[in-house]
Structures are given as C-alpha cells and as structure tokens.
Length: 261
Image 1 (cartoon, rainbow, N blue to C red):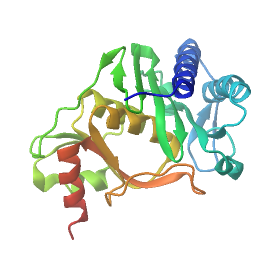
Image 2 (cartoon, rainbow, N blue to C red):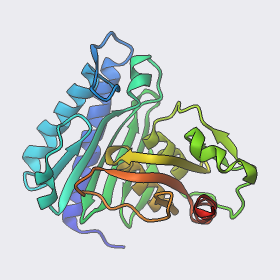
Image 3 (cartoon, rainbow, N blue to C red):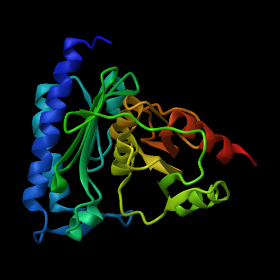
Image 4 (cartoon, one colour):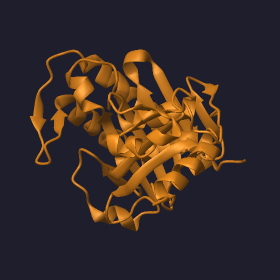
C-alpha cells in the first residue's frame, strides 16, 4: 500500500521525537526526580513533564495545524476542529519510572480522521523501539512483527485487569493480572507475540491506547472495546470503553465470550 509523502514525513518526525523523548527519560531514570500526586490520585514526575515539554516544543511548531492531546496537558476541545491529532503519553508506567524499574515507555501516535496512522512506542531502558505506519506494517527495532494466532484460548497468555481475566478463566487462559506492564507495552507485546492478548474492562484513556493499537493492527491483529466496537479518537471524551487486543481469531473468541451473558 502506498503512503502519502505527508504521512511519511509526519511518521519520521514522530519517530525521531519519540526516540529523543525516550533518551531524555533514560537520562532521568533511576535518579531522584521530583514527583507529585494529581487530583485523580495518580502520580506525575518531573520526567513526565519534561518529556511532555519536549514533545510540545518539537511537534507543535512543525505542525501548527494539527490538534493535540496529551496526558500531561489540560485537554482543549479545540483539538476536535482538526483532522489530524497528536496523541502523546510522555511516560506510560510512571510508577515503574519512580521505582527505577524498566517497565515504562514513551508512546505517541498521529490520528487522522479519528484513526491512528503512525505510531511509536519506545522502551528506552531495554532499547526496544516499536513503530508502525498504517498500511506499512509494524516493526520492533526494524524487524517486522506478525502476531501468531489461534481460535483457541486454552493456554493463551493474556494480560489484563482482574475483572476481565476472571471472566475468561473457564476458557483455560494463562492470565497475568499483576499490572506490571503499562497498557502501551501490553499492546506492543501483543504485536510482538510476547503476549497472546490484552484485555481490560472499564474506561481507558486514548493516550494509553492509540499508539499500541496501531502496532497490533499492523501486525495482523484486532483491537476493540469489550463490546467489539472499534475505537474512534478525537471525540469529546478522550477515552474508550474497555480493551480487547489479540490476533484476529483470538480477538473474536474473547469478544464473543465477554458479550455472552
């Protein structure tokens, strides 16, 4: 599939900025960064804010006509007037960053007409750089990703919250409810075949999903809410209802089970 020159240029800009942002995060990791508690009880660090500033200082001047949505920037519904939108998660896995573990990443996606068309997820501490462009495939450090798939869920390695996993236990899954991996890395791991699926019940923020969704789709998988409906981004409320991500056959089996009374 041919990709327009504009999208190719946007993707290169996105990839370069995510890598630079990840290197900034790596330089701050395992140091005594300042941290605060947000009104919703989640934590934010000096690293989150500095990486967000880097994204803003790089992307906004170069693409002034694009909308903006980031976990660390107050939402402005003016974004909805734009056909193209950057969705940024400066650090997904802030707790791991604070605890000086390596299960955190920098993630960003470009949305066009409500759908992701370019994405990158960078796990700097282990040098894993995931990229995808719509119609061009998904890659890890330059190597193409293809999701292994099966109609059976017996023995499938699924990461998710306890509510979602408990509803699938009768199918013989191997569930991981620990929550050690942030959502973007769970999606990246599905794309890379390290997990057979990711499931979650409840609202999930767009910045936790958009980049990883494109990785899974371009690796041959499927992503949706628990009802089976696909995601549309750049809506008034920046969240989606649940998550099911897996190879296409497993995805269909999971959704069917979750929808069965």
